[in-house]
Each structure stands twice: as C-alpha cells, then as structure tokens.
Image 1 (cartoon, one colour):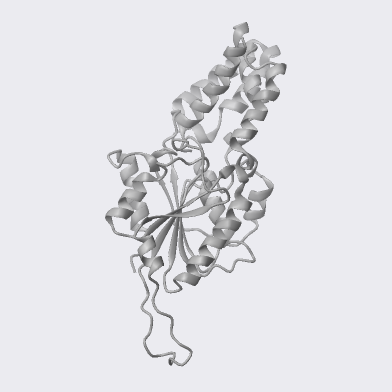
Image 2: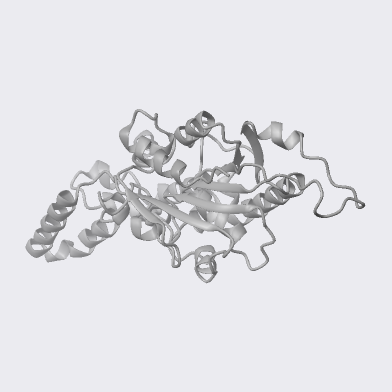
Length: 342
C-alpha cells in the first residue's frame, strides 16, 4: 500500500508537468543569475567609451544600441524553457540573455536579484534598452521589480508576458486534503486509502518542498498578488500580455461532468458534500479549453491598464515546444512582433 501511495504522489507531479509546466529541471542560480545566450556578452564586454568631463554634451553623441531581450522563465524551468522564443531571437540576431532563478525562494527574493541585474546592465550599457519577455511566474517576478513604488529601473522599455498568473492559479493552492477529498468519492477501497491520514502530511510536505514559496506566492489572493494588484502600471514601460486557451478539457466534457454530478447528488443527497468537494477540485477554468492553458486561466492573466491583451490557442508549456508546433509558431510570431528593433 505504501508503494501505491507514493505512486499516487508521483502521478500528481507527472500530471501537472504533462498538462502545462515546462519540462522541469531543478532551477539553478539561487536568487538569480544572468546567463548570456546570443550576442549579449559581446555588447556587454565592449561598452562605448565614456565621455570625459571636458567633452561638450552635444559633441560625439553616443549612438543608441538596438534593444536586447532578457528572458525571465516560469516556475521550475528546465534547460529547454522558452526554447522556441530563444531560437527565433537567435535567428533575428537580437542580443538575448536568460535570467535563471530558483522559484522555490519566492518572487520577492528573486525580484530583488533581478532588479540588481537590470541596474548593473544599465550602468554597463546606459544606451541600450532591455525588453523583458516572461513566461508564467516570470511575469509576476518582473512586475515585482518594475511596479514597485521604489523602482529605479530606467532601462526596461517593454514587458511582454506570456501566460502570467497575475491573479494566481488555483492549481497552486491545491493541497493534499484536496486530493484526499477527490479520492474519497471513489468506490474502490484501494483508492480511498491512497492518501489517508497517515500519508496526508507527507503529501503536503512534499508539495511544499517541491514548489517552495512559489506555491504560496502564486495562490489566488496571496499576500504578494494582493500587494501587486494595488500597484500601478509603470508609465515608462509598454505592456503586452499573451494568454493561452489550449487547456486539456473540452467545455462539453465540463458540462457533462457537472450534469452527471448534479444527478448523483439528486439521487443520493447523503453523498452531496463529497461530490461538491470533487467539483471544487476538478472544475477549474485553468483546465477548460477556451478559458485557460492548463495551468493559468485567461481571466487571471488580465491587468487593468493593459490594452494589448491577446488570446491564442496554446498550452502552458508550448513556449518550450519545437517551432514546428503550429501553436508555438503562432505564439512566437506574436512575441517577436512586439519586440522593438531600434
């Protein structure tokens, strides 16, 4: 039985990865490091010569460099994260770097490091703007930087967010008790006891360890998201949001499920509490085609004051799929169209 319980726990993680997360790999970089990808080091290692104090302000003006792109991936991002976007940036010869971080540390700690990285780049190349292209949690981290009342970042011109959980994801709030409630509705005794009282604490601890502070930060109405919702958009930055609608469950299946459970409740009122718990766990916009991408709902991506909000038929991990994938290609084309070329 213990083996079966651990199999269930593993299955939960596999399901989550299959539905939406990028192919996972333990994140490196601690609170965050800048990893140059294409042309970034060449520009950064050869900044234009500084003008001497005696040089008149209108003499030998320093030419504006083309914008560069800093990719900020999502939670538990592996080595191939955002690979389709990276490939297109390389083909377009756009200077690109990746901000790698450990999502388990939480958005605030990571954002502090990202702010330091951006400030260092501004000091090194004050005549180059940076475009932040983010995926999932990366959008929340970027907003923690650029929308902070204490924000001193001046070199970010654009923020392009792919599937940002601006209002969180209900999947982040799932607990071992939710899984237990779901399994208790099955007839088979083996399923009922996969997550019993003895293993419930283990499952909760495993989820907390695996996801870290990101689980708390990305839960709807978390302290961090409520604080961000009170912030204003940065007036010096152009915002774009691209949301996905290719969740795994068709709307018809959702309707049938609601109808079936409604009939079950009518036929067996004593089972109503358990069945309603099943609906609470299973009936989520994130999983419904047209309403979410498998992890983040379209509604959650929206931000007041951002007019450039586009929905496309892609799943949450499609930014890391090959460009031959039509949904990935369409998404990447829209991202590339929003990157200024100077």
